[in-house]
Length: 348
Image 1: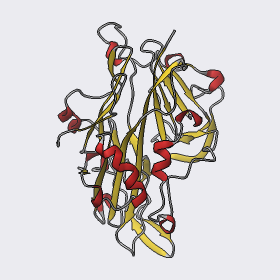
Image 2 (image 1 turned 60 degrees about the horizontal axis):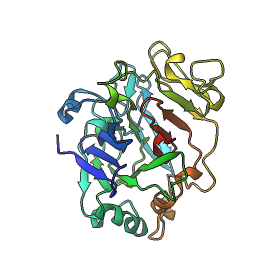
Image 3 (image 1 turned 180 degrees about the horizontal axis):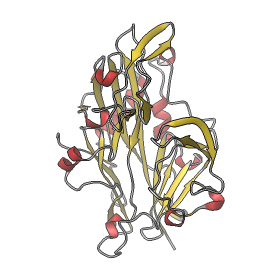
Image 4 (image 1 turned 135 degrees about the vertical axis):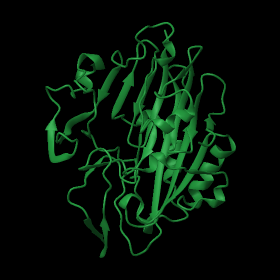
């Protein structure tokens, strides 16, 4: 396993920092310094090498995240008059392919691109915005090439992922909470084979514990059941016994999935048998000023700067879709479809 890539905001305490393992783009540590204490907010093994024996813990997942049935393969997929055969490989069970197959992106090595000149899937204007983050040690772009036929997926695929830390915007003196900054992850992919089409669905698969650093003081701090959770979702996707989608939606009202603004409470108050492992349909659209993360190739010009907006947009203007908070540590994470914020303790 290669050495961790350390990213940090160029500031004194309170601060925000990440350790990223190139293998599987694993977020090994998420450090925040707040209220005179250093917190590591992500779950997982302390030794980076132990990630080799643990699946999907803070890693990227793909080439296609989530579950695909394997009993109807090969699938024939078409786009723009191009057709390819797709044969997902079973791994979770004989009838289910999970997170890209037996050896998905989570177990593959990514190359940190130290030279922005080698980056291919971000525009010149975007790279100019990223350059300052590179110079300050607060960003890195990682690359991987997935070969044609890997895990049954058609087409040679180039993948580049930006992981960056962003400073808080605006004055904070009068705020009750101190913003520690944001983490931005942007996925870009391009098929290198012109005569192929492939399914792709990328995300980061990670978990958080806002109280883990209190384990020596609070006996049950390794449990997240005291955390408060808000999910702005009206429905979940109905699942089969094997975790596959039924194609139907299930209302969250009256279930343990009801964590809307009026029903915000401790996770443990509604904890279901087997925990949470579902897909939520958020009840609000993205803000009008938020650009889609998928930009058509015809619009990806040297002047396109989707990333520049992520670096400069006021985080408080985004209405988060999920929030996780702890009264014990005073830390709150706010998530959006393009970024999340880390907020420090509430001040008197």
